[in-house]
Length: 206
Image 1 (cartoon, rainbow, N blue to C red):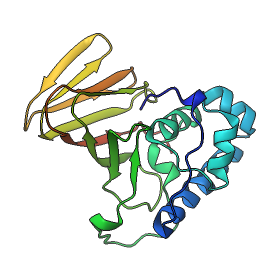
Image 2: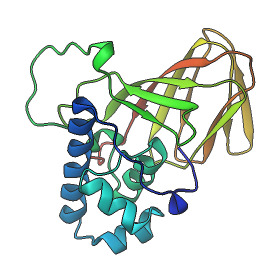
Image 3: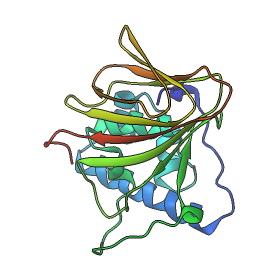
Image 4: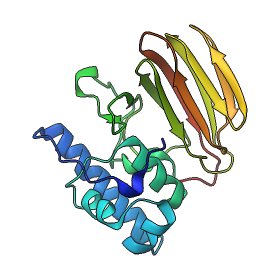
């Protein structure tokens, strides 16, 4: 999701073991993906629009990355969002306890995303719970070519802007679109918008 990421300063990590573990995992995966692609921090910074200092802090596990930052880097590396949260090993059944959820938020804290799938490896399909505060707009950059979004609104109202087209959703409405163009989510209503999003990446994505 879009923010002025080049001017963002790294966010301090709260003293919480689960948050620290998650941040360390993101940092390790970022470093692995960057080196696999033969990119220096400087080159990745230029490609993603995220500062070298912030990338370094994330890799060292010293900064909690926002949704906007990870989307920028994912697009630059041409990998799905889940590539940053993938852990080794997986079982046939995974129970994701709500109280242990790993939330990614915007800098303002008015937009949040919760992954509803296990961090067991990169995947072509991802499932998220999204929350957007009243009177808030969240901008999204174009994702990798061929990426699609399938969204259903569970609470409130939501307006989706795709390029120059606008689509208003009410409770229970769903929308499916190709997300390789800039798009945005707007909550003009008086209550928080709650929606569920399935993202599908093209087969060549990791």
